[in-house]
Length: 122
Image (cartoon, rainbow, N blue to C red; front, side, top):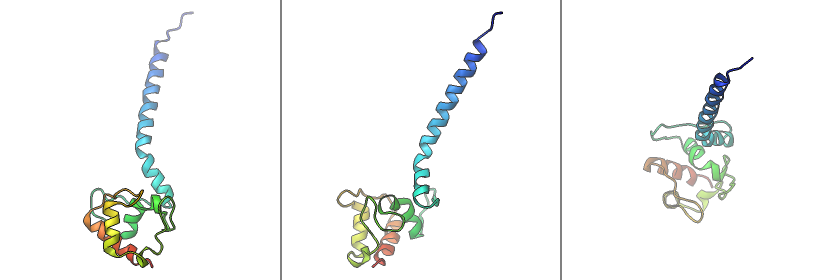
């Protein structure tokens, strides 16, 4: 009895391509999943629009290094940052970075919103 292995080969090749496609889709979503896990499952996407909620901006842009509760992780503790820095100083750090912190890409409105919010933390 002779068996034709061509259908099995085609199925194997299609399966390999499907696995590769699923892998690349997963890699693209890895950062979003990680942010969601770090922020208690909440990730607000703005789709290019300016966010006006400082907590949402913080969760999307800062919490990865400064922790969701501002207590510091890789970055320093921000729970009392307003007691030592003004709004303008905080904006400058956000825009230009400081030490090992890179500049954060936010709109001017988002930068001002989060700087004002952080300056209230004393």
